[in-house]
Length: 443
Image 1 (cartoon, rainbow, N blue to C red):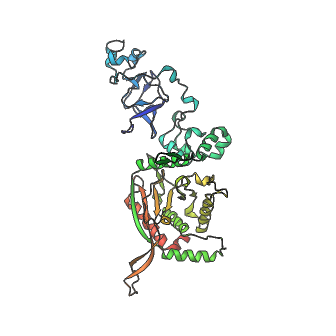
Image 2 (image 1 turned 180 degrees about the vertical axis):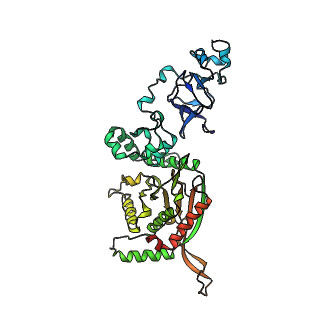
């Protein structure tokens, strides 16, 4: 079914030819909109008598007929020379019974068919358009591969269609060796810096880099398509800070060594919570929910055009020191050069999408944040500022009613299709337990 808010689109490919029979559920053609590529499925059985709009870059407004279908294939010949304009004034020259079988309504008079020279059937074969599912397009962008047209992915779906599993199994290095000329332009486009500012009267336009525009498109798509809901919990850090102090004391750190940071322990706690509640370590696959074996954590660093979310692979099975080393190595790539040039990280970890995203907003003094989930992930965690708070004293032997505690607020965004309220609450409870009992992180 096409989007109800769709106003116009282009036909990427016809899957059925004139005179061909189709059944209910068959994909007649693929339509590209500004949001996605969608399949136009047949609702009943029939025959395609005439294709009125060829595949190509010409945009077609909703309501304009693109084909004529018949229930009986015997009348197909009556529409051999049918053109759109003829239906505005008179019926096409055919037998009296044939026009009555025409299902589409008469189109507006100003509509004209695309010129014959502008719609050669070789458009799809040139490689300018890629036949792929909407999820495949989304995954390619989310995984940092860029547009599918710049990749050498062989589709395994019907008619060579690229499906989501083809994108997930895509190996950039191997593909680069097989088709370096095809992938190089796409890679250059992603890495290209933004154009210089453009001053105007009373304003200045700051052009975005391709990477920044890609992130914006991903987040917009995710916010529109994922049913977000949010859960918040306050977490005490007293025990975690003491554990951090003890761990760093055993590492014999030098003057220039940062040691294990609080953020490293919180990333580990998030990974441990994903292991404790594996149903959150999953993705929505339209017809199924895929649960992953490994916990891969994206952590957000930087801002604006320098916003990145490198991934820590298999964080659920790794120690805190190993996670800390990976985070420090990734952050080191973001440091500007000695000449002051902006960093352009190229590591594989900067383009990969994990199973959960963690962002720490505490450095900006933000108390709480409701993050946007990064598809195809099902959860995202935002951490607020660390602060001293006066809280009820839970020590039964103390005479003090209140005590001072170091705390932060954690907010979990959930995809309700995958993680319902009960599962989200279990996840936050597991996260809180691991943070307030940090010895469990060492198990």
